[in-house]
Image (cartoon, rainbow over all chains, first blue to last red):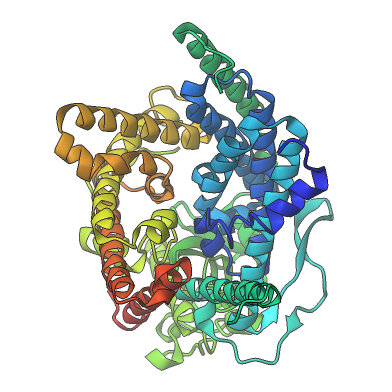
Length: 227
Length: 182
Length: 206
């Protein structure tokens, strides 16, 4: 566990321990705020800040945290970072604050964050904990952005790519391209409504399952099994 | 896990330290963000300045409170040329904030959707589609409804429900303005 | 400037109830509390226990947090300073300690109740439906009465979806329909139920 490379830890968080598609954790924001690429990106950034902060501090304090009250202490640490993000968003990115709504404070009870604190940061030094935080955050972001993009494309026929930047001294999520990418499909409104969220994640998971099953079949055939 | 066996007192002390540090950090952040929020509020100005910025009464040079809660009088120099108001009305998902301007006969001069939380890519066209809100200018209170409902406003195709909330909401606000003024 | 909402509900109760149970159903429309939905609906007994526990904790959390927010944290409260930025941390601590307390009490005094309800309690402290309902109560500015009713109705909304899904999934698993035993099946089931609610209430107006 301790001898793993920094990069190895990051990649594990993205693929093998992908929080959404493999561990199926922290689903609420994944479904609720992924109506568009922009919202998914905003949520992913807020989440990354909280997870990195909580992982670093839990790992720094791990020898000082009394085991009996470790959960309340984790919650206190996570909650501090969540409140900071919440206040910062309100002050500096009001449109994103409006769009994400209560799902920013709800990062406190996101099973991924508290799960990483308990299962990883509390048992590992700071550097691996940072790597774990980065990896898991990227894994989470990939899932959010994938679902957000699929829903935006199928639901509206367009994809509006944005990036966090500062224009005229005002920070915000500004489009990268002048015109949103346009797709030649008839928009299916249902995809941006709640049932569309369930449908998207179900279809994506099915796709991943089929792909991994095929891989395993190939592996088994190579080993000489008759299937 | 059992590197440290703390006494109850130590546990309490440690909990208190964590909580105290959290409180200090949060209070510091609160100070910074409050400053920024105050700046934002100042930049946005009061409702009178916002109504002017939105240009809901195009010829107005100044808005002044009419004494009521909602309604602001629009002046072109010294002449009263209409009224403006900003209010929240029901939308499909959540409340919409509309800014509405009328002339002295309560015929609409401009409607702006200030904020909305409608479905992205569909209902949010009420804010992005300027052709939709442009239709409101010149319509009287009796025409403020979707053409499907016998009014003069054409809803955005695909976003009829959100369009209806805007038309009905504007009518509601103007009704209230009329009551306040008279 | 900031007024404290009253104690007695001035809101219209019936639409509030329908909203919490159907049109803004916590599981299917607002996406709150999904971990337990996906994880526990393979078995209708566990779903029942979890639903009861969630409804109970949500209602009591609403009862506890409303006065704390409006009389202590809000600038209109007795302290007179704006402490609203501490709301998340306060609410989560209140909910967690309350859940711990209840678990302790029923384990001590009522083993049968503990068996059917108590074992789900630790799962609830970090369930986003509970924190979600108290945050929504504050955000919407409900009166005390309305916030309690809203929380209770949201709990019932949570319960019926849990039970309906569990009934379907359990039967399918028993029949050996493999697809529905995993997460994927649960998501497809959720798609169906959510579609029903959304379509029904887009035609039938309240």
